[in-house]
Image (cartoon, rainbow, N blue to C red; front, side, top):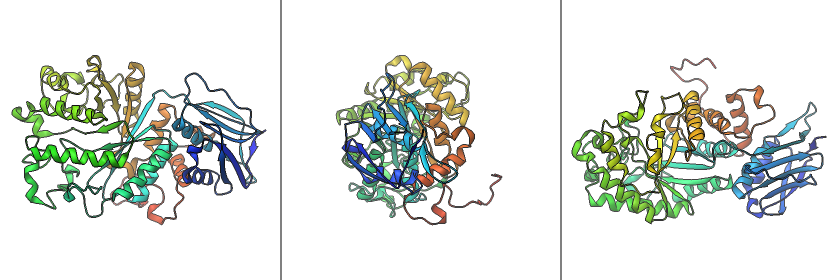
Length: 457
């Protein structure tokens, strides 16, 4: 027999789950028909009614169970408990009379990959509610970490020109970080320390610093795209930026320093020779600051690493040149291989430095076959994890978050196999949005009709 939901139910749960987000989520997934109250329960548990308490599987992050007596989630830690809770919420169904219920089931949360990260960019064009919806969707899909990259959209005390006038205040950003944690995910701060120093997409021609204060030109390479690593003021500024991000993000294990696509450093021999000292000093500084450095891999992957496959190679250096850069890195550095064109596992670029002792992550984008190739490469070669990148395409490709998560083993609704990723993503977003919003904030696109679009769906 199913467990039927009444107008109001009470859960005995770990007190660390006692927050408005947990209650808002139950309200949303019960279609605003059932109110949840919380009382103190056993650590790492969530129990409604008097169900038979399940046993946690040996390789599971959590176990979820429902029977006619009630609902239960038991987990290894508080983050896994939240992921189990989000799995449970997706099992709420309704019958022809509109009655809400959860059919009997037991599910162990076993994932193909332990570190399931996602990278979100915050652009001036993104609405605040849209970013919240992206974070909540990532939580519902059981990602473990969220990398937040503010593209000129966070106000820094150390330099006002690092942000646009409509940037987030520290208080506003802290609210996003709080929500990431409440969804059982760890936030990771990111700030580009080499290329992308303009904090703007290259195709736009914009530059957050130099368009507001051209007198700061000496902080950058002549093209404005990368930081001038010879300038002592750059070192001081980047250190100050990291300090502010550490304070804002609080307890977190990682810091993503970017370090990709510095075209002048890749193409100018004298500048490339500076990379070993620069990257070595930088990653070691971050380690001494108590964070584990994360960096993109493209600046030190030689052409040989791709074995003739489609790639996003930035440099044409020899393997010896690349190893010289790699050998200076702090040994706890996490290397992230963003490859968007290769669709055949295993990806040779992800395995090229496997024997050098570094933790390596695969990083796909929204393309389905590419995501599968990365996940299979990481799983079969026992790499550190995966990091889904999203860049500027979130407004068009948000359903890829669901597709990618399911490849990793994320929980599903009882009806998921019979629906499409767009329909299911739209349904999840409605349940995850409890703020009042206008037409342009519904779904994931501001408008249904985009001029020049060829899409028929």
